[in-house]
Image (cartoon, rainbow, N blue to C red):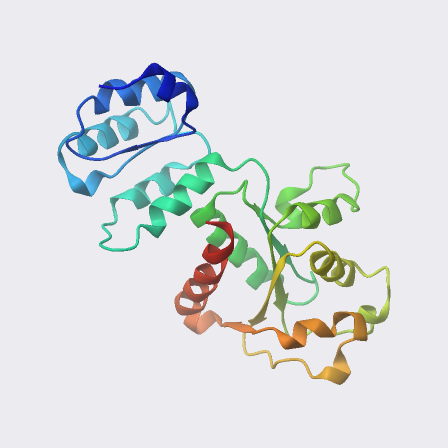
Amino acid sequence: GFSFAAISLADAGIIISGREGSKPSMDALVDNGKPVLPIPFLGWDAFAIYRDILENWNESPVCGLTERQYLELMKPWRRNPVTLFRLLKAALATEPEIFISYRRDDNPVAAGRLFDELAHSYGQNLVFIDYAGLLGGQALEDILTKVEQSRVLLLVVGDNWITERLEDPTDYVRREIIAAQKNGLRVIPVLAGHTARPAVQQIPEPLQFILNLKFLPLQMDDWEVGVNRLKQTIDDVVL
């Protein structure tokens, strides 16, 4: 059985096969507007509940998740249920924790593809990129507020990222990096494509702390390996 008091206190539900009262407790969670994540590959009632949710997705989707994300629950895991943890985080997220910093005239394709990848894993509410996160009429200054609210800043560095604008105190990329350091974010520099690691003489003194950080490669011809390595680093912060 289950307690209605527990249902009211819970943020979400995880359905494990063979637990008595799974279906009534799931219904109670759904009625209270809370996400339910069955583990379908365990079989039995967990699979049945998972199937019921998918069949009724158009009328009653799981809040915070897309149907494509929900299908990720079908992938079995043995020791590390990281997919479940990421989806749970996605379902409950209301504000971004992962900020993608990039230059539009540098490598916007890599930045956009990275956003799509991370939004699928962690949910669109948890990941911020300017073109998807700012509404029409919003001030660009709101971008810095998003940095301050985040926990991770991904610094996408391509071949054209280093310019004389880095010397300009009003440059937005520069301001994002400084705001991230000031607010204690984990800054993760990402080398897009086959970009070389910047040299110390190319980086203004206020930003040179990034040269002490590990740069992660993210190449189009080895995308899956690079993005999975990046996700593991992000997991250490946000999960």
